[in-house]
Length: 405
Image (cartoon, rainbow, N blue to C red):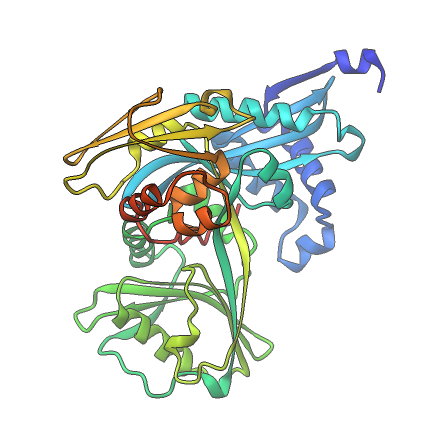
């Protein structure tokens, strides 16, 4: 590429006027064809119109060669439940570059600028669905959640299960359904509190025959739901949400009632726990794969917001963090626990020390991997006494993240 061309390169925020270029780059990078859109019931105008809210509500930065968009990086502003605290976060999506512009550092610069702006907006953590785990690990992201997929034969569906309530199918704008998800998100670690933009993405590729079934208690309180589709003798379950065991039983009773209609039930589970144990016939097929990666953007702010299990603990831990991409994190952060109060300073204090990379710190505090495991795998440098303390103060829940952007 010539020197004159490089001089024409610049970064700016995308707006609705850039919609066609934004859409064109996405389609090229991810090979979305007109046939793909038609198969999902979209036409070209539909998909373009659906992306207007993205460019209006999200933070989308692009690298331009003159007037031509050549690389882009989008951040959805959302809120996330992290061990009971609701934090501002950014979900990264639409990361794409035309191949003739790769390897020139444009994406790295977009990424850095976007992370700087997220920090300025108070978003202390970011999430993304990776197309390349090694690439994002190199920039400080790490795996924080799994997607588990199950396949159950009709003969294996629960038959001796009961629940006192009932199930009703509802529309996607049902207030019971929407409130139920919010109640679930407010009590479930890792869940995203879906705003209008998140719900639009949730439904983007679903067809008209997608169903929502809500479980109600005997006194008509909604406590669980499932989103599913029946096609080609298969029940495809997109998501199951329940607030208690009764709702779980009620929904699986409803699934079992379809045994004469389907040969197989296939679905996704994001809890990090296998469902096989809870089924009468546990000899089912389950697969697991990494799903979402996370990255702490502002270590100091995140530690201040984090819900450590402190009790009356009086102790000091200095986290020596290595972050080669964001210089403000590449330092020592000391957390002081004093009879339930927590304070964070940017200097090493007297007490225990923990040395680790930014990705390891992220997966540790999000609960995806435990301190003992990370220490054994040499991702943490410290001593056995400090590991025992980390095991005590870091909550044990794994993130439950079912969203995809």
